[in-house]
Length: 279
Image 1 (cartoon, rainbow, N blue to C red):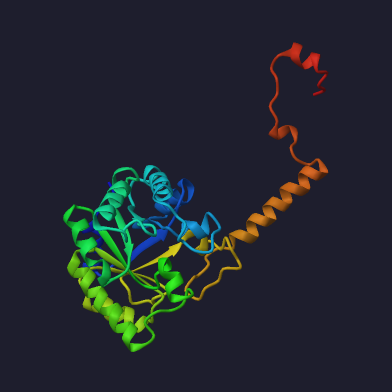
Image 2: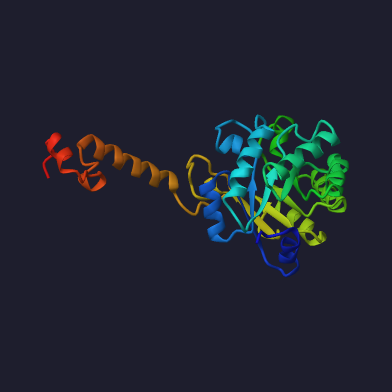
């Protein structure tokens, strides 16, 4: 049985940490499930991680549905959250609900995630009334990269921190079931977590949130050149992968691979004789 919104709330109520990981395909989502994570986020960060773009802005609804469906189809227990991509909810409330519904119906997600605070309260309230669970997202908002200028910590100044705090309270009142807090000072994240009754999930927000999220490629060390402060690499998969591919290349070049051990053999004696294959 899949984890549900009440299950996630119960984790906070019981003082248990929530484990969320961002994944975009069948293998990594299956690995995450076998490891026992609570939530898989299908993030629009796939624009950067999978497609190699500079930001998340070019990701489309169809691409989000495609990746969400893959993750949902290949897992059974984790709660699946899908990002609402750039301009899928900003145009109108009606369009936002329609797109969120597509992620639920076609992508088989259990919830959607929306970046932003007070300015999207009306959209979020109507989604919740339409029985679409919504996860909020405050702090660093990747879809606002052209507005903020760079991927940097938010809420360092009092006015910024106060705006994020007020937005967190407003999102809870609007009906979101949880909020991602990205790249904000840990003191602010703790204050928000202590004040809210719904769970907070941090990424670059310190140890006092109700849960944590990392992109699976980041925590596996698949890109050694990407090393933000908030990422802990539990593996150096890039190094291991390159070494493995180099070994394969060298064995092919030298004739060491493939051997007969990796080859198929005919059982027909006439065929063996025809091609003069020596045993």
